[in-house]
Amino acid sequence: MNDLAGLAKTRAIGHAARMYDSFEAIREDIAKRLGEAVSDRKSPMHTPVVATADADARVMVLRGWDADSGTLRFHTDARAPKCAVIGSGAPVGVVFYDREAKIQLRLHGTGRIEMDSAKADRAWEESSNFSRRCYLGEGPGAVSDEPASGLPDWAEGEEPSERELAPARENFAILLVDVNTMDWFHLANTGHRRALLTADGGQWIAP
Ligand SMILES: Cc1cc2nc3c(=O)[nH]c(=O)nc-3n(C[C@H](O)[C@H](O)[C@H](O)COP(=O)(O)O)c2cc1C
Image 1 (tube, rainbow, N blue to C red):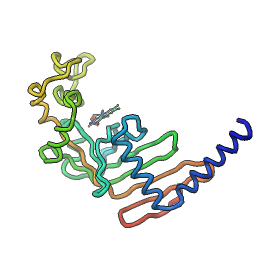
Image 2 (image 1 turned 120 degrees about the vertical axis):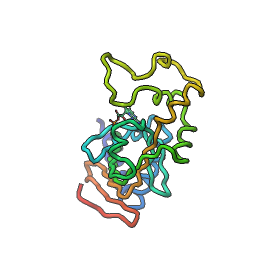
Image 3 (image 1 turned 60 degrees about the vertical axis):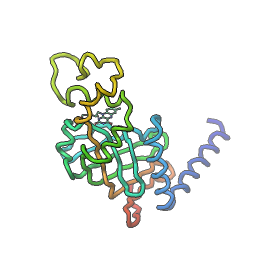
Image 4 (image 1 turned 180 degrees about the vertical axis):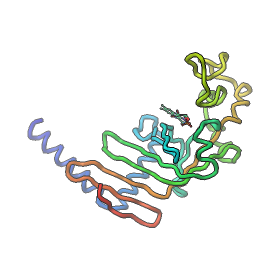
């Protein structure tokens, strides 16, 4: 790296450190990142890891973030083991990581599975037929003697029609997570920063 490039990098790092010096700035950063995570498939935070109290964790696509209520929305197969673990209310942790920005976001809250609610109906209505197709086949974890997608043969590589997809609706569920704490972490060689945010306020904590 030449002197000018080194200076530019040092300034950029200094700028990042100053950007994250208030809880307000961190709340704004979280709001921006979660908004992009939902709307931009290329966002590094589009596919967080969702952990349940049975010491299991899996990648899921973030489908919605309601900033007013602090609720995350995911789509899932109602037959997936995590749905039985979460049921109508259980602790859920969600970890997001932006490798380039070196920001980790750990959200904790209470999850619930909804299958028949207005929100679940709306999520189904808004899904594409290709997305809905996932719910036509065997439930996640069903065993098979051969490598298999779990889909019926006729649906392999096809976009099913509305009529063909109707039976899939009963396998579709949403996972809603009411977030109560947000643990924000910025890894920086000028000094790591970590803040714990709740609805009531914030607290700086050692990284
Ligand atoms: C990139 C990627 C995205 C995924 N998105 C979802 C998702 O949005 N919803 C979901 O239920 N599973 C998703 N999965 C599959 C889960 O990681 C997991 O294997 C599956 O849900 C099994 O259910 P279980 O966690 O209850 O055992 C995704 C996997 C990958 C690799």
